[in-house]
Image 1: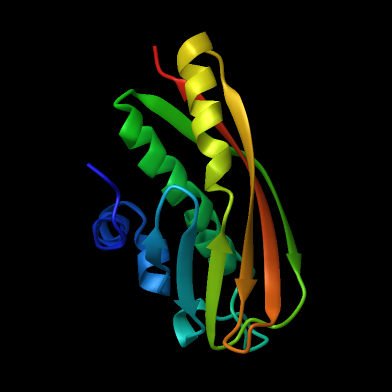
Image 2: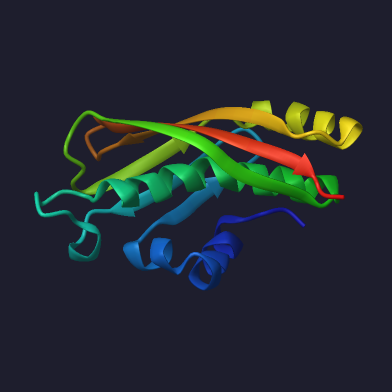
Length: 151
């Protein structure tokens, strides 16, 4: 069964409540791209009247992880996934609606196939860019995911 935005948002209510209450929502996901939005509100702000960096991180991580979950499900195998490393750059105050987009889905299938064939863990490096309503980049996140076939 394919991952859809509505199913994933329901999942986040139960399994990722901090992200859900902060307003992180998956808008679209397919094999190549995922888009996640979050709006600056009182509950997710920092003392400087902008979005807390960790909320941006949750949205950015979701834009990469949702595609991995979708492609893992398509294999029919039990595969673990874990963020091994991440790096972020904040270039502008995050206010208003922030949209995080990851277009690195094409990297996932090869890593999953290799993990299934070899039984060894594989690394996927993905980037998510957050832009405000004016199209200005507010933050860029780089995630290093590891995937491995469960034994």
